[in-house]
Image 1 (cartoon, helix red, strand yellow):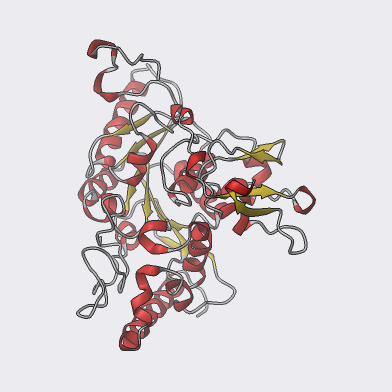
Image 2 (cartoon, chains in turn green, cyan):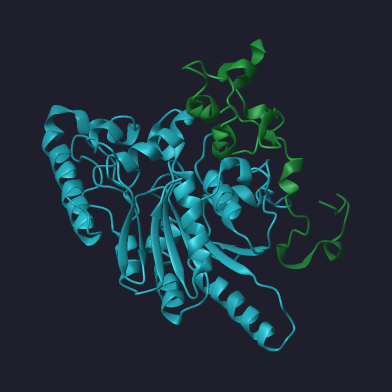
Length: 101
Length: 308
């Protein structure tokens, strides 16, 4: 949000408009997490199921390949680990207690 | 048919940092639906979880123009926007192709926004209305809606010694929209992402109004562990509670047929809102729910010209 905290009402956009697209990214939701997904590269087949099913855009992909997990936003729901088919039954994403990471 | 590799090269038009619950289904629906769009999109949204969680002032998770007006009128708000777009195009002030998508929950679509939706479809606006159906008023604390399935425990249809939860079957809104004789109606599920993306592409390509009903598992309202959202969407499809089909110009087509139709119990028993149905005294209700699904499924197969 570009409006400073001490702005008067005349400085605030009319009608509750929010002028900056995707500004919610300034609000980090990673602190909600109890469990965190951990990536095991040797089991990853880059199917990208984790990416298409992540509700928080916390799975990062580059050139069609798994790149990493954005822990600033990951809420730890565990969908990625549940949907991960892995390689020969060995999952590429597993959930561990966040404090043990 | 798109591959995930191709889709992953596109920008996701909903950002991180929205306040939906961990494991919520609707951000997945927004992501998949907007990935399908090939033109710039304008979105309108009814009041509900989606609107509240994605647009907590002064933040917005949307990377597309977004307008929220009231609970009941996301369809009429967007029809106004679409009419203005047509007018500006006619005047030569705009020469861009723009797609219009309205979102509403089941409360804002089946019940409160129903009149506005019906009107917008009848007037023939060139827009897509997507209902994210989580089967109750989840945003205000799980009150029953006309999309709530029979037997579900909600705060306004509580299960207990006197009741087994909601008494009525859910309203088949997709069928009601087919009766509007609009060019495109479809049911989809975020678990079947390819089917969903293909349907949104089709819906945006048709000239005139389109309606999509998308099932959305709700961690809080359905009462299940947050990692099960996609599994439960998949089970809703595989038990034929939520068949995936489309209706183009009145022609029904089944877009996915489960290899094996699972008993609805498989879906029900994994959700806390149906737990009471598994008590011995409710065995009859469980049987009736299965029979209802079987009847509807058989009817749908006949409409789609599929073998029973």
